[in-house]
Image 1: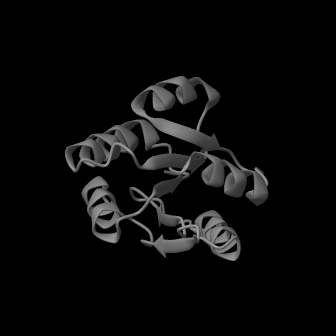
Image 2: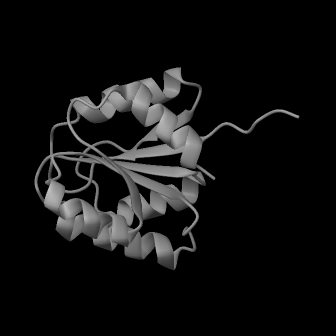
Length: 131
């Protein structure tokens, strides 16, 4: 029996125009054998949740540098719930202050990775936690 390929949506919510980190992560996940869908920059919460639904992903990975995570991430999680995607692993990376991590974890964002996190650590986290 073959193992199913993990499908990951990599998204850049909000007006953040810097996507180098998201592209590095997308490539690392792809190189690790995962199927990656990259939405591009300046995505609304609705666009991200809709793409996750349409692409039938196992994981939603969000990258944010703008500081708007506390406004955007709750809406994305709400929409994923409305779409019945409560079993999707949600991870985030970028500039996220330590004091915001417990609130984001309570929303259901299971992995939060800051700048400099080794890509193999992110790959392993996703492999261990994806449905």
